[in-house]
Length: 337
Image (tube, rainbow, N blue to C red; front, side, top):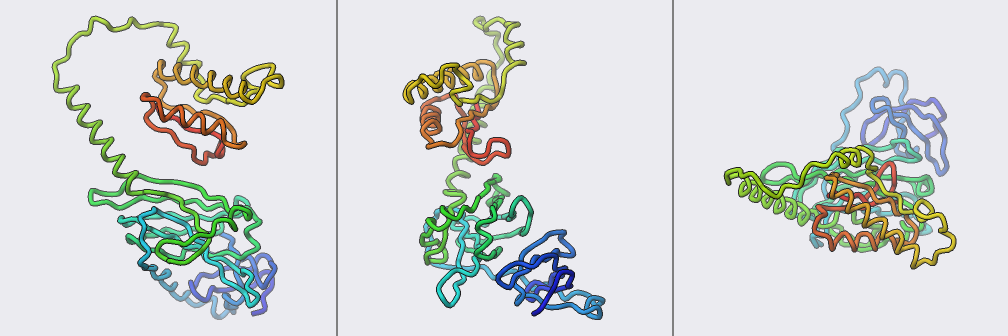
């Protein structure tokens, strides 16, 4: 179909309408949707030209979403994103279909959002049965170089209600993307695979067990009559000031910690960073701080791995995670005390 900027179009499969706002390569255009206030790329072959007479008519109802994919390759790996290429005659990839795979024994509710250069181009609200998958989106091959980010929010549906929220952002970088080929659960064939939420069931069971233990502990502590302790430490005024000036983040870049950073060996740098880390953590626990962020940067990951190994050995840490944060990216570990 021949179109130009300003042409009113309708999508063949969804019934959505919009206006062409830009011409792209490979018979593609960018369409501004009428009802979602969103711009998305589309192949011209997937569009129908709307005449003024057709535009006055009520839009046809959209077709139902893609039917769930059922398969037999169940491994209980968790929730994954799979990118299945559509190939041209010369075996090069023309576009990628994005599928959400639920390889867990729980139904899940999912919110999917894809952005390109910070601009939202696709958004879906989904329900997936256990051990099933569904096609949620597609994008052209050339878009891989445009900074694709996918946001996923997942909640498992349990017998006693909805489980905890799991959130993650997946950034598609071409070099890593083409190394990510693996056989996908549910599909049972090789695709570009990203395991986003591993062991979703195990995480929920651990949370339930922890909540149960906390409830038992609370009950035991509160059924006993209150007694006045004789060894309570006196209240110290200087700790109030310490708490007020405490910074909830520690930057472990060596130039922030010492003045002679250039004179230190890598081993001495790591020792200095870990010494500051230990003192900071001890102070936070003593003051009753709820959570802190340890900024370690990206690099080769040596400092991050050392910090997380140390955290695993401590008994005064509730949990820690190194997930994407809008302020720190992946360069900081959040520690809940």
